[in-house]
Structure formats: C-alpha cells, structure tokens
Length: 113
Length: 112
Image (cartoon, rainbow over all chains, first blue to last red; front, side, top):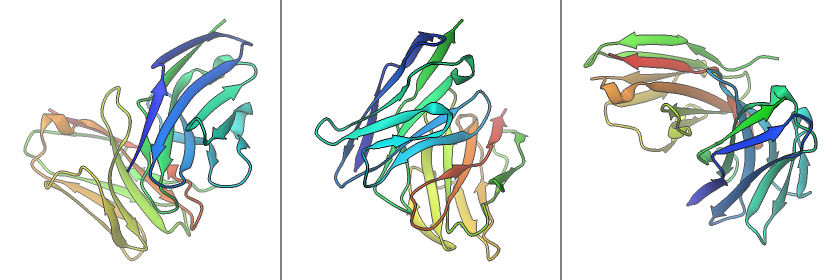
C-alpha cells in the first residue's frame, strides 16, 4: 500500500521568491514519485518524476525535486516564482510501471506580485 | 504532440440516468487509467486496463463499468447516476515501462 502527505494545503509566495512544496510518502516497495500541476478547470500536467537513479530530478518550468529515502520525502522547489506558477500541485506515488497513482490532497500555490 | 482525448468535455444528466465517457489514449501507450476528482479533492483511481485487459480496480461503484476496445480507446459507463457522481473524470495513458501517466483534459459530469 502507498500514501502521500502534502504539508500545507495552501502556500503563498511573492513573485521571485523561492517555492517549496512539501511531500512525504509511504510505500511498501521502492516508489515511483511524481509531481503534477493542475490549472483551474484543466487536466493534470506532469512536472517531473523519480523512478530510479539520480535523486535530484529536474522538470519543466524550472521545477526540481529531490528524493530523500531516509526522510521519505520528495519536496518540490523552484528558485524564483512566476505569476504563471499559480496553480494546484499534486504529489503522487505508484508502485511502478502500469500501476495506479495515489495522490496527495494537493497544495494550492498563490503567487503575489 | 498527440495528447489524450476525452469526450464529451461536459455532460449534464439527471439522477438515475446513464452516462458514457470516452477516452482515446496517446498512440502506442499500453495502459489506460480512469480517475474521478470531486470538487476540491484529489483524483481517485477508478480502474485501469493494460493491453485491453482490466489490470486494477479501485473504489469504483458497481454501477460503473469500463472496457477497452481493440483500437485501444476506452469507455466508462455509469448507470443509475446519483448527485454524488458529479465530478471531473480523467483518463490517463502511459507508455510502456515508464510509469508516467499523461492525463486528458477531463469530462465534467454534472448530475441534477
């Protein structure tokens, strides 16, 4: 079984500030980890993923995440927030290829001018 | 690049009616997934198909059924609709051996 906890249902940052969205997971096997972004009334877009190998993964739009097994974490960061980053972000875990995704409750990111 | 196609995008039904949602996965993707996202909620897994065979089942009501056809498109059939079925329904597909899932734009079902 697997689960995801996203700390903070709402994060607010100023434009140009660091973005840090927290995700902790629980998995009975080495997990596949993902971050998705969802804009209002749209589908989910894959930002980045971790399966195996390098623990620091880079994604689209300047986002990156680091897999820390000892902390069971997969936090999402971006050095400088843009107004266009305002959206809902979901962390997700799966057991591997062809397995369902289990999502966290999501974090709404607000970017203030 | 080709994306997952879902139809219809919006659907309004009355209680106890039936709805059929369609999904056309990205070509050469071998797995299709269905998720339900209620208002302000995270997506919940319903069912998946690997190479046209049902591969996993989540919290899908018995009133719902799904299948994948020979051309790889999938349909989610929902009967005896209830007010609580109002939600966004997403289809996703994944290429072989990557674990990545690519989501369609969703079908917004409103049950009145």
